[in-house]
Image (tube, rainbow, N blue to C red; front, side, top):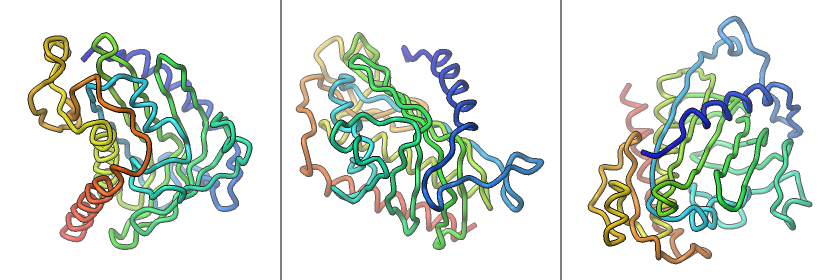
Length: 260
């Protein structure tokens, strides 16, 4: 993978330091004070990373993910995400301190931007905090001071590689890690579904005839999409597919959690 992990690591590290100095404006969105293990009392630290590649150009990926309050690709219906930054709704220029609010899997989510960058030619960088939330059906609570995603063009612009990394504190770090991993995997795969639903295997395959064979969908090797000529996502046409994928993913997570 032609993915500059060093540059992303440095960027995420710098952003994490910045996150520690941000005041969360949401009424109930502040993070608890850290204890000896870096987490509030009764919480335990964890982290998770998902790497995923879609063989669609960065500009097309940006058409799906590039609005902070449009999370149709993450399972939220159109117009269901709200924000405390009314000005950004008109300009789509999101700045540190902006919070968004939505509900998923029975939890009320509050995420507040600490770093946001969306250059025309990449990489797209979005880092936010995750306020404490509870998923009763999985009997777990968690929050995070660093929840970041980076989307970077690779394969000479014919594909886009993503990195979802979160550092979190949870009442059960194993359960929380499994939930966050599956949600981020589903998010990344759904971006590819929105843009055509083909599978990535290699840059060489894209350079030949613009198609590739089926990927395995793992978090380290990636997996959806092929043709760079796919149409830009423009609305709700793929929402039904997304919601089915998200429902299956969440059901799998909850079944796993309840069996532990």
